[in-house]
Length: 105
Image 1 (cartoon, rainbow, N blue to C red):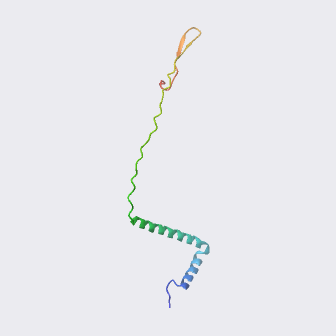
Image 2 (tube, rainbow, N blue to C red):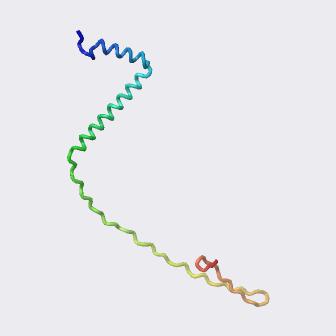
Image 3 (cartoon, rainbow, N blue to C red):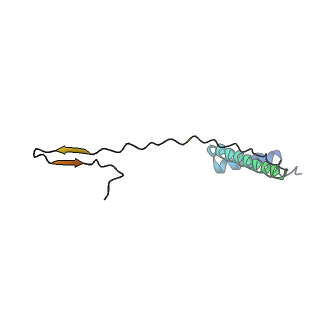
C-alpha cells in the first residue's frame, strides 16, 4: 500500500540520505542557490509575460531650443614696439621683440 512516491516517510529517507552525502554544513549553500535559481526563473517568466503585453506608444519628445552663450570677444595684444639702444661709440641698435607670431624657424 503505497501512498505515493513523495509521502512522509519517503521524504524523510531522502532527506537523511541527502544530509549523509553532502554534509550539514553545505545545506545552507544549496538552499541559497536554490532560492536564487527560483528568483531568476520567476523574473524570466515575468519578463516573458511583460513582452506579450502591448506597449503604449512612446511619448513624443519636445526638443528644447539650444541657447548658446555669446562668443567671447578676443582682442589682439598690442604689437610690441622696437627698442633702440645706443652704444658708447654712438652706434644705434634696434631690438625687435620676438613674439610667437613673428618667430620663424
